Amino acid sequence: MTFPFILQGNNVTVVIGNKPHTISRTHITYQKVVDAIKQGDWQKVADLVEPKKVVLNYGKGNVSVQGDQLFWKGKPMNNGLATRMIAMLQDEFPIEPLVNFMENLMTNPSKRAVDELYGFLEKNSLPITPDGHFLAYKKVRNDYLDIHSGTMDNSPGKIVEMERNEVDDNKDRTCSVGLHFCSREYLNHFGGERIIIVKINPRDVVSIPSDYNDSKGRCSRYEIVDEIDKDKADEAFAKAVQAKAEQEASVIAEKEIADFIKAARA
Image (cartoon, rainbow, N blue to C red):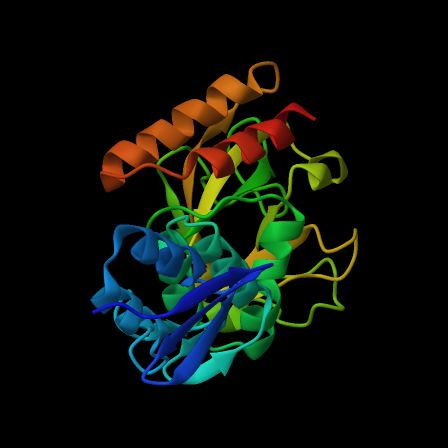
């Protein structure tokens, strides 16, 4: 069994049963089709170019991809997160951390948080962990207590939380109640003597205040991963990442680690 085909420009066209199927280079199955043709695996070619067969399912089955469209529980998603996931698939990068992130994010009861959080992370180069959480910065007092109330212990290894309905969800109230986190760039606008790294589940994010170019956020819960030594930021962050990787029996994507360390250097 063989099928007529032609490679032309940025497309490959395969004719199956007198019906032509054209796959563009930007389609997630393009390279797989080309490779299957080279290997003479015509059954695989047929499976790949048949649209109803090319449905990729991820995670708990809530995330699926067909062609260049990502779906959440069967509903098409057209936001920044979906675009990034499709681009990563096209470049043959694993998307499981982002799938886990989406699974967590979609349990967040705030539509605004769901809509705004991933853009905040991309804009501020904050990495996503294998279990779908993310890492961010925070400043605290020299004794690790929070800056505003001086009552919350932010020592490494601690989990800090408060009732979600006590966190201000109005992004236009820029300095208000909640557990604060921020980007590397915002640290200069944040009082405090120590810099810590916090790990946050997307479901616990409440708002991204609109001041300082959307570089900080409020949440109801976070875990303190480690402290960054101002003079040894790279070493401190690497240590924090390694500790979490060992605990989760996984490794944060090297590119995201590099991006985060690069930001810490700045």
